[in-house]
Image (cartoon, rainbow, N blue to C red):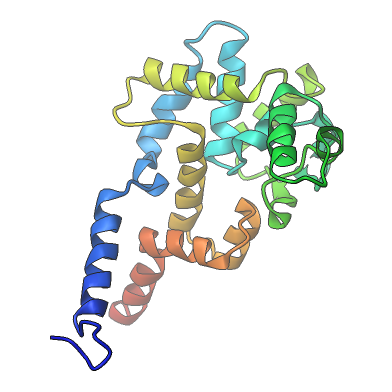
Length: 239
């Protein structure tokens, strides 16, 4: 049926159907989240890799999979970011860097901005993904997190590998763990978000931990976890 303007009155239903079909056929990162059991297998598998790949893989998997750091933050990780007394990691707004990854990104920025030179673009790097990504992350959530970061600080001044190496370390550990499905740095970050949502972390502190610019992202993980729903039902039925 058509309206006076010639537009089908079924248009909203058609648009909803298209969005629903897109949602069903598009894979989202949260679909690749590891269970606690899978995550433990992944950490165990890190120790089977040759040195120093074993420690590097464990460091990556642990602080991405439990503290939610992005791969770019790992690649630019500095021991100076670690405050051992307060047990925190500070992700800065800017960290001077001229690595290959940053130079490639700078050239791409300059290509799309006539007023920006490559050198000026390089001078602004490295910076985290969003303004909200500059944040303070506590790492005293578990003893193994503390020990891993302390050992990293004792060994390195900065993460010694490239951005692409981070992917390879995660893939090597996943292969050694014989995990089915896709395992990659961003799914480990989603694993961290899901882990804390299931533990009952509220959306505002979850947003702050993960460095999301949009509070709705935190709400999505809390909704998927079902924690708030379960708590509400238990309060009613366990009176």
